[in-house]
Image (cartoon, rainbow, N blue to C red; front, top):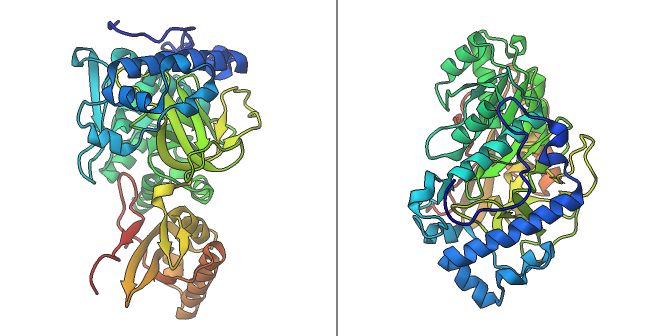
Length: 454
């Protein structure tokens, strides 16, 4: 055990030992009153830790006139200041740490493509919590001891690989730490090792399905039965495509490095929303414009507070992910609440001729039309001061080899589907199969060239 503040309270993860997961007694099934009491206890402790040890939080709380002692109920969290991603970048590298480096056993970081990366830290207890929520995540999807899990999330500074690895291993599954890339080898391992579950981005699994067919491997003939897909927004239409093209059941997992990594929430076998592990993460839904809370069932921006993170507590983090709390209890019996699957982010939105557009809307419109593949790219340009939007769409080999008239009909159908969805006419360009670059990580859907001179 490390020295310093320890979050006290019931040992809710007691049943998450190696090979000993017992769903009926897990924290997922705590009575709501017990869960809320535990949340408040942990909230008070973590806010006190942040106030005592992190100058940024101490200063902001003082400016807001809030102290840890003023937290009388869970609703009082709304009095605390928000944390933004810019706060993590501005505090680079260790400015938000609440533990000395002698207690930090792990560092992860974002890719830093927009400047300095965001750095996150873990104590030994933090790593144990991370493994426990990932055990609960895999168990919710039906992964169990004896499964063979191919982990195709990237290892290294990205949190996905090691997060999934620790959880699957602690559950008692066999883990293949293959990481991302080398698609042909992924398929060989999947086939030869009898893989029963896979973890990767949904767009990469679609690529694996296609490449397997080219290599003469029928994905449907493999024992693969569970896919745990995350790290990028994806639609219900994408799930339908994946499940129709394979025999697996596709589950959405949610997480973000700033909070812990994967394991903040996941779908259960009902596939009816993401259960958030509320004993470790306090969630709010706010109006992204006003910052005020939204009622259950009303769509808004997800805000998360870590309740047990020692090395780097995060208070009211604005995720920019758009969702809503599902008020009805889940048929699986879990008492931890659900949110709707996240199909878009407020900062993914772009505006074309006064219309707000999200890539997920385009994806859903395209996949509603038969003959297209879930590979597309949105190219934004500006011509004579007017914004233009072109959607490049891959079509199946059968359609691409069809008559000119058939291709023109498909093009019109796609344009009509998008116009019905967006209320906006856009240019559609049909491209041959495999012409849009595949990603081994998060798919890049939008290319914005409006800043280029023309």
